[in-house]
Image (cartoon, rainbow, N blue to C red; front, side, top):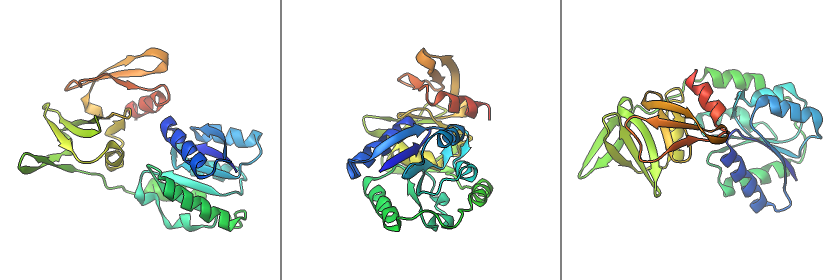
Length: 252
């Protein structure tokens, strides 16, 4: 089976590629692309894959736009960190979705579902309607986090939080007044609960708030280094892959 992966986070794309190999060692990943434009260009110059696995949000917009611009008739599995994107339209034949982080068992079940169909999409999928639907959705984000402090349970309002970070498999909240609280959720679970206008997943260890960024510095090989306030105990470096997304977020 030949698979095309559309995913703007390199680590997420590599994870999906690895899971595909575990589920079916005969799988060949044709390419890993990060944007709508690169995907449309790819389809223009290649034979269609047997399967597309695509994040809903790519660097330059919603991936549904790709399929409204090309004539691909094969199966698609969409991935998303947001449960509210699992809308009824995904029940169309040859379309499925996976919540991120993608789990092996769920990927295997999705592949089995699409294999059982074994036919091209007969009716056009309403991708334009999906784009409008998602853009019109009003998402609800967390306004506070409940944390345990000694024998007490405290509510930490979002406006007091400067950033989240993980260290030694533990997660912490750091507030603007430099208080640190442990949190019993990994960053992968926290990230989708936060307003993306305010918070950015800088790397695997940090989710930072816009007004906690103190300084921004160019770094080696197209990467970006940021300093936070309050200061973090470790360097925070944004990869060259995520740097364009970070710059776009800063200028939003």
